[in-house]
Length: 206
Image (tube, rainbow, N blue to C red; front, side, top):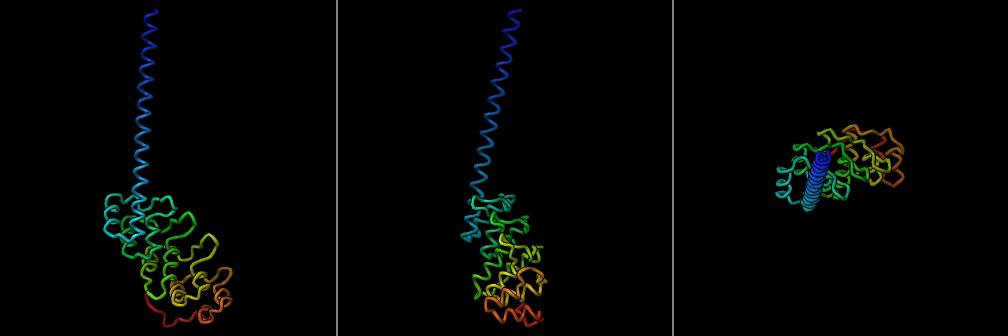
């Protein structure tokens, strides 16, 4: 009887050791996986920020599922491409399944980031990125963390061509404070005039 008990306890001990070893192995594999995944996401985001197109394509072809993964900075590779106004990468990422509804940790949508880029580079007269996002189904009325929509932001800075473009795409003026009041308060009278009359003007076609 004693011998049987010893054998039983020996079996239990061996099973416990094997189980513990298996758990340790699985945890190590998971740690390696998540660490590797994080490294790849960070490298992809860095490549997007640096506009290294070929490197981006390499990572996207190999790891297309990371296009919507968040980096330590709180942005996905796709959101960074939008913030950089990189239409070429935006198109590629959309084909890889980029989600136009995702927001950064600062509550910035892809469309909002693209609009901010357009505002920061008014002389380029290139709104192809926001156009791409619009036709991909992005919500052009999505507010930022302050509750301001792209139309309100563009009205604040007197970005008349962008205001016209947004109006032509039926951006909502039924927000508070009104884009008209915002533009007028900042002295952008031309922009305010367009917002008040909603003319179908000779808007630059993007």
